[in-house]
Length: 311
Length: 311
Image 1 (cartoon, each protein chain N blue to C red):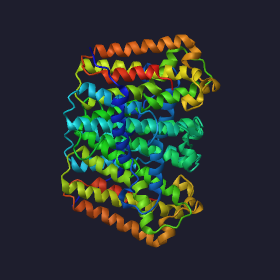
Image 2: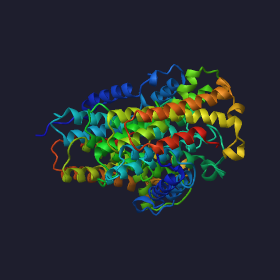
Image 3: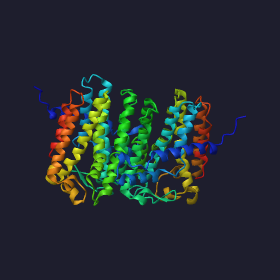
Image 4: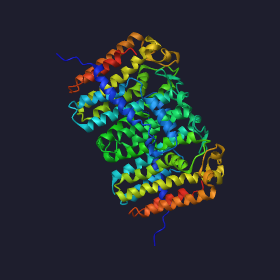
């Protein structure tokens, strides 16, 4: 009998490691021994945006994919790369939220119950903090001390840049911006979400894999897994927007419908959307079955969490 | 007798190469075969921000430093890395201008005689275009086709991330933001400019060098050269802000004084600022003398241009 995998216990130690690493790398130390206070304030805005918040789904996907590929966990360079990649994807996610919340975008004043960065620090500081967080993500991926092999550094930067850029997250946000009040086909909606949310979630999985040495079969399977849960994440988001209340979500429920944004629920209906999310879960798990990898319990549990979460 | 070096002729062929490469890499092709129009609009905003504008000083510094280190120009991978690095630093510069011009920062409506990106495309698109340009810079540095060695890719990403981030350009902008109306010491003013403008100019020089295989002596000399011209660039900017008229500058003259921003001229006076700029030029040229490099004519001419320019 397969031993029961406990996601909560598995996550706890990984989350502690990620929080500690983020706390260390998004540093309040003034660079270059500056005695002027402003970079300190910039770093404070960056820390405010990153620390002590969020589910850290993307870092957990990086670490789970890395452990699936490098199950012996014997390689220090590979483990170092994985924790750096885990933090880097979270920094990209965090910067996107800071910029998304700004008045010219979604104009949100609260996130996770706290004032958003531009409310707390001003718009200009929020803009700069987001910009600096994106740069810091690539800084984390390229340590100068030789702790991560150059070939891994280069591959991780390549993957992250593409997941974050105009053919990834930023591109998806641009479609989202242009699609408010527009009727979309299911294909257009899927393409928007594949870029806006899916690219970085899939990127997290693939980056985690590349911290080890995945074979072609495993890599292809993990790409399919990442694509399926990336899309499922958004379908479930759309479902929760109509079924959960604001207190449970930690953000305003019903907001998409209110903003006249196209969603899976508005396009497919609630029941069909729920079926679709389950199909994507099945697809993600089937991809893992075909991966040739032995230790995929964490990836399975994370996929289940993405689809069956209630907030 | 040393043959006279003609910067204009040297620059012309390099600029043509950079413009062509930017035109090819900041592409209007919709990614992933999307049939929805928005990423197209995002890419249009990115192209508008990047193409057909500016002196391209940073790309020229990359290429000049690369040619100084790799004077035989026999290595195709090294040349490919250099043109990619040249475009990457320009994308970072371009994104910083897009975000700088936004209403929450400098609120500029004209740049190089054209409406700024947020005026032309809206604030949200300007924000996303800047974000996507930063990601694209790292994408250019990490081609997947093996045309640039992984060790070079990793080093270039490391240098660019640090030059652009909170200990570089973004950090300098944060100090600038906080320093309006504040009295600064010369040291504080220098630190601000070392980060805000100097880090990316120096980074351009050092990245160009790393496209080849610089020895320690050359690298150290090029770092000093880059630091000197990086600071000189800003000192001259401050001088031109009071001595040139708006038509010559292509931007509003006297703006810094009007905005109550600390400048070298306000701190040292005009004559002393001019002396300081010449000292920095001397320092930059002396660094090249100590570099052990034979072909430094382009770097010398660029230093002279930075200090003795009239716009």
